[in-house]
Image (spheres, rainbow, N blue to C red):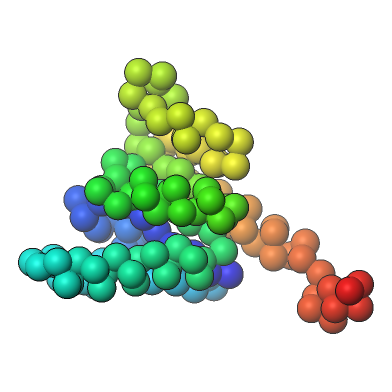
Length: 145
């Protein structure tokens, strides 16, 4: 299973931690934007944007860590449009406050989590592992076609 993490450069340490724990649990990171240097021209922005878009496209699920950066909500929109599994993490209750929340956070396909980051990671690992275990083997799927 491949994952993509969308967030802000301000959350880079959290993103690296989450990615590391998911990789340790056997998941594959579709694209690691934390390895990029800050873009200082439009061509670099374009290349990074393409890699980030491809990362969302290749992922099986996406993690949104709030507060997000400029591209976070675009990545969320791409994931919603592609019916990706979406896990939304917030360190506080702002995602449940109508005056500060986004309408898109409230969609049923967005799994919201408020609290401690390690509990969030454990929840994602459990949910995604259960999904993998429920998927029939390729041969079973092929025989049904």
